[in-house]
Image (cartoon, rainbow, N blue to C red; front, side):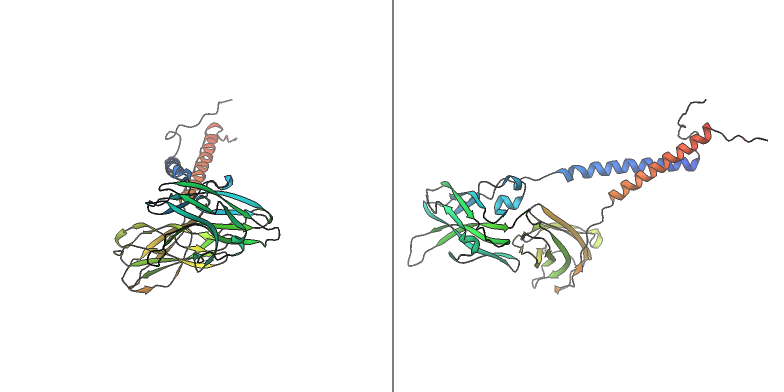
Length: 357
C-alpha cells in the first residue's frame, strides 16, 4: 500500500489551486499581524490611586480607603460609591489636609445633594436630606497646622426600613476666615456620596448614546452634542473623548475631551457637550465619541456636518463596525477550504481511478 504524502505546493497543484493556497496563506499572515497589533492595547489597564491631593492654596479632602471589589473603579477612588442592604453600617476613612499659608480650623459635616439637569448639585450650608441624616463624621472638628493632614471616619448607618433606590450626599470639609470688615470667607471642598440601597446585587450601570449633533456657538466655536440616555440603575459621571475622522481632504482632528461636569440620573436623557478647536471646517466628518462612567464604556460614531451657526439636526449614532474579526473568520474559512482542496487532490494522486474494460 502506498504511503500517504502531502503534494509539494507548486508541483502537483494546478495553477488555480496554487493561487488559492497563496491567497489563504496571505490572509492568515495578515490576520495574525492584525491580532498581534490589537491585542496588547486591549489588555492595557490604567490604574489610579486615590483622589486628587489637596491644592497648594486651600483645604484638601480625599478618600483613604475604598472597597476591595471596587479597587479598579475610578469613580470609587474619588467618591463614596456603594450598594448596601437596609440596616447596613458602613465606614470610610478620609484625609483632610491644609494647603494654605496658615493654620486652619476645619469643620467636617454631611450635606444634601441631588442629580438634576445633568449635574451633581450641592445644597447651601448644612441643608440635610435622608442620606445626610444617616451620616456622621468623627471627629467633626479638626485644627491643622500649615501643610498638616489628619484622617477622619465617615459612618453611614442605613435604617432597616430604608427605601430601595440611589441617594446622594456630600461630605464637606469647611474652613472659615475671621470676620474682616464684616465679611467671612468660606472655603469648602467635598466628596460625593452615591449610595444605592436594596437587597441582592448592585443594580448594573448602563447607558446608550443615541445621537450626535454638530453645532456652532455664537462666537463660531464648533461643538458636538451627544444625547446620552441612562438605561441602568446607577447615576453616571461621564467622561471621554471625541475624534473627527475622514474630514475634508482626508483631515482628522482630536481627540477632544468631553465636558467632565455631566452627571446623568437614572432614567434621564442628557446632552453631553464636546467643545472643539475653532479652526475645524464644516465637514462632513465621521465623529467617533467614547464615553465612560467608572468601568463602563461605550463608543459610537455618526457622520456629521457643522452648520454655519446654530445646531444641526441630530444624527442617529451607531457602534463602529469592527472589520478584523470578520477577516479572521474569512481567513479560517479559506484555510479550511484549501486544506480540503489539498486532501481531495491527494486522494486523486494516491488512489487513481481504475477503469475496467
